[in-house]
Length: 90
Image 1 (cartoon, rainbow, N blue to C red):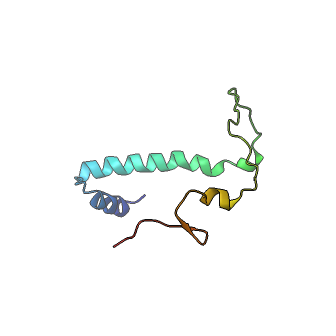
Image 2: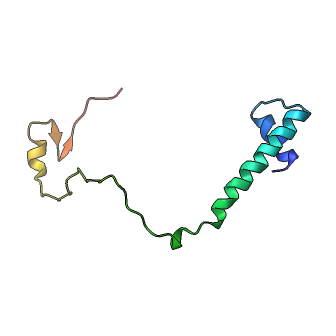
Image 3: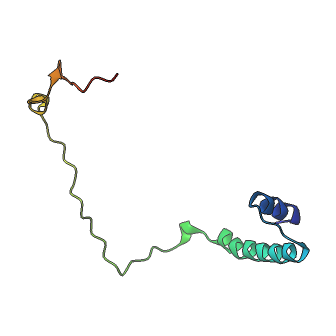
């Protein structure tokens, strides 16, 4: 990160930085950028899968499609030609 980018970010964040603060923030930003650069070297495809000491259990049931009869669903409702009637909107 260069000084111009840092000043632009500070302006957007409504932060006033003096010369010393700019230099300190620039040094910190470059240090963080260097630390994050290590992630560029990581190759996830070559990593060996690991196990988790916590056992994960799926608590949801499997979705099984079941036939339903729409007439039974509409029974007892104010319906007209297969559509449920709602209140009039003015």
